[in-house]
Structures are given as C-alpha cells and as structure tokens.
Figure 1 (cartoon, rainbow, N blue to C red):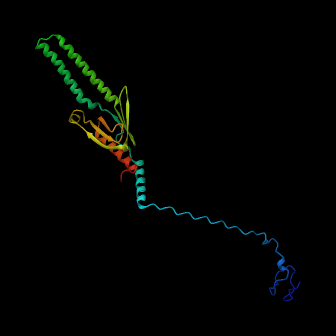
Figure 2 (figure 1 turned 30 degrees about the horizontal axis):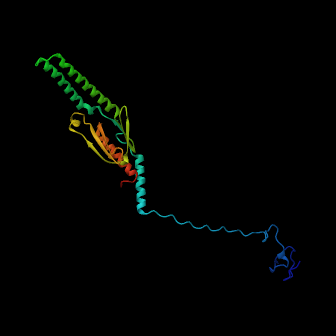
Figure 3 (figure 1 turned 45 degrees about the vertical axis):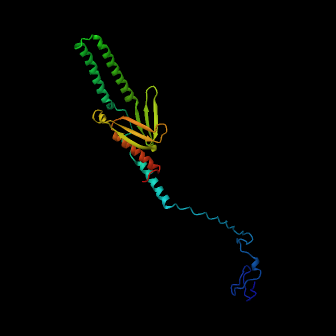
Length: 244
C-alpha cells in the first residue's frame, strides 16, 4: 500500500504516513482495538449545586458573657464542697432554762407546805396539793422535752430545706432554697448564758403556705445560718439570678 501524497510504501494498517505524516484515506473508519467509541461514551452528569446555607448567627458579646458566667457557675456548683451543716434538730440545751425554772418552782412548792406546817401549824394535808403540782410540773417538762427533742428535725439539701415537727400529726414543710428572701439570727440572753449558746434562725421566703419559718433550738446557729445563706447564693448563681 502506498501513501497518496508521497507514494511511499506503507503498511495496510497504518493511519498516517510515517514519512510525510499525511492521513491515509479510509483510516478514519478504522478504530484501534479496545478503544472506546465516542458514541458509547455518555457525558457525565454534573451534580446540581446545593444552595448555600445561611451562615450561623454569631452571638453578641453580652450573650457570650452570660453563657461564660453560667458555665463557670455550673462548674463551680459541681466542684463545690457540701455545706458545713446539712441536718439537725432541736438541741436539748435549749431546755436548760426551763429545767432550772422547774427545779426552782419545785423547791418553792416544797418549802411552802413545810413553812405552813411548822410555822402556821397547818395540817399535813397541805402537802398533797404541793406534791400534785410538783408531779404535774415535771410531767409537763418531760412531755415538752420529748416533743421538741424527738420530733423537731431540720434537713438542708442543695435545692431544698425541710422542717418536720409533730407526733400524732407530723407536718413537713419544704422551702425551696432559691425562694428564701431574707434570714435573721436571734439569740436571747437566756440562750447565750444559760442555754449553751443555742439560737433561732428565722427564714422569710416567697412560700405562700409558710412565708416565715422559725428554726428554734439550734445548736451552733452561726453555722446553720451560714450554710443556709451559702446554699441560697449558690443556687441563685447557678440559675443566673445573681451577677457573678
């Protein structure tokens, strides 16, 4: 087979002339073995471009500051130690003054019939009313002690304060720590000098059932007062109700 341009002998399977580079007639109809045909190749479909989402709204400086404060308060609440006082009750020392008064009245009730029988020459019958009064007085003192020491209980948790009281009808008051508006610590002269330093903590809250709760007969009332105040402040900080 010869090239039509330069008449050079070429192989029959050649597509271009090796000498002049001219295309051999009919070469465009021949295809190399294994070469894919242009008809069989399907154009690739380009995926549709997805609509761009709107960028997220950036928080303001005040929002970032508030979120940082809340995160810090939550972390502080998780790592904070428990309060120094969590539960207690009516201290027996709060009845010291009543005990001494009962002893004094008992002595008077014994001296009165003795004086009447020795000085006024009254009969021995005057002892009976005195002894009855003495027995009734001590029974009353024992009942008061049992009621107050055995039934009045207090408990403080991270979120609530509980107060229980009563024998036949036991009542339990629950006050949310965050609802406490004001507190007051009271210690009378009797409490400081006779009753061993006990005191009373008065809690004023927004609780409609019991807006004012008196915690009487507390041993170490300063510790109880501080524990309640710390629990209230920590709960308010955790809920973002107080600036940090």
